[in-house]
Image 1: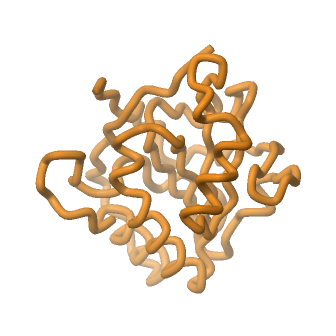
Image 2 (image 1 turned 135 degrees about the vertical axis):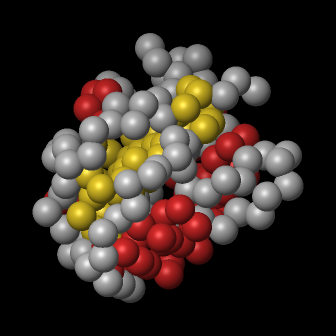
Length: 184
């Protein structure tokens, strides 16, 4: 499996707005609809990537734990569905319902959102503070398929805990590693 790393967008950047289909609710969803009072986690994922499959349960647990703390979560898939039909909206909805995603799962058909966020891989994570300024971009944790390291979400948990307690977010941030976004 190919390994692509995050582009590591400039910290302090504004969260790009969007309005696209949430495959779970079948409604158009904007950034304002998913924004948390304390922070917002924007995740680029897809249905088929082994790196995403490896951490899916941890993403669900993380969202369940932190949504009650006023952290917003949203997942976005931007893969070309001509070359990767398993990532089509109907299949996204089926996966989200089967796994019980506690966050919207948006389909970025034009790939404009992924480009605006400088997303490069699945999974790719971006955390914005309450003013929607980028404070983190990178990995969930050090676990990868086959490396034997447990999936804990420690990197993202640390950032969210810092934001919740109004402490500075660590400056050292590791890029995520995963499958490349399947560009048109």
